[in-house]
Image 1: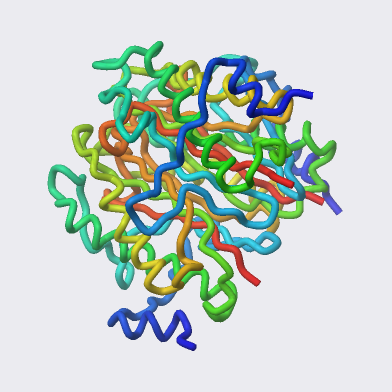
Image 2 (image 1 turned 135 degrees about the vertical axis):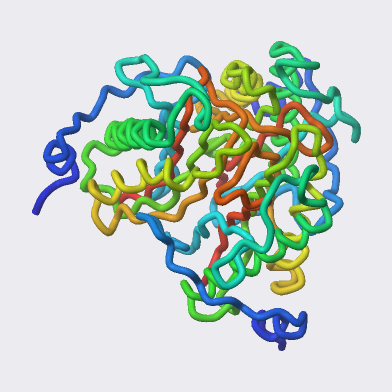
Length: 153
Length: 153
Length: 153
């Protein structure tokens, strides 16, 4: 039986440290059997991997990779909340925000970078409900932001 | 005692088939007593009824009708999850995303197309909390996207 | 032991009346132990305190104050649902939408206006998960909209 942590290693990925937010909010809040994960940016060691709008400075392919980085940060935040990822019963909902030009309408392909990682890490428990939308701008000029709700035991 | 399905028929509407998403996500996820419905586009038989931005190519009146189509798709997705709509205890939350020009600020009127249908179908149980926002763009250039959380028994 | 209502008074603030929405939705819906609060605009006595886009007509400093007004309206809506604010166990999730120009990327600073008020009013129970995004436009040309999920007893 492979754990989600082992699957992350098999994918050649490493769970990052969870950065403390600089404001009056937390990376995660647990309420009953659910963990709410704050919107995650494509930060690696505290710096954005890329900035700009999809359809302009950022290609859809790059944005898809950034969505995966956001999802990895979200998974790390969940693990910090519950201790080990085998406690995840189900990824319930993913919200994917893509900062893009008004004529960029490929948000689903971008957010698939997050969705596909969740399924590779959690298997059937990673299949989630989802909304993907294109927004005018995101914090620090990030191209992608991913939020999640996870059911845990 | 009229069922929600009968009310849909009385309104002259037909519940559509639920299309399988083409990615690592599901139309709905049930977690405890709640069903989370993925963001629904105004698709009829797999094709968008209209595309473009509200305030430019799409009128607010058309967008309101599109929001109703999104809500009908969301209701169909809930039914596919729980079997029959009488199991809906309450529509808890609706998120309405309207792709529009920056000067279009009539999002509430557009999203009322979804909210009004929910109340016609579910009665008092259809009265929900809601957020309506105007976004830069939506998947496939859809003018409206609707997501929902529903409490079920 | 200071109540949240007393803290609001100490901050020099007054809880507003909760306006009835003009559509088929409610300011709040309670589902189990959670209260979902509809997206709140910076309305004072029924009128928007300011309109326009952050980065253009509206400064980030003003927008931050508007986010506090939205949060105060959200707190009033929660109180109307549960009777007294000491029943709030935890502010679980805040969604902050900032209508701005595509080059405005200071959404976190704006939404801090809401987050900081929640912590001042509820203490540790006010620390929440959060997503802050920049949108194209908001209802009535509001610069900020805040939605919340609160756990109650």
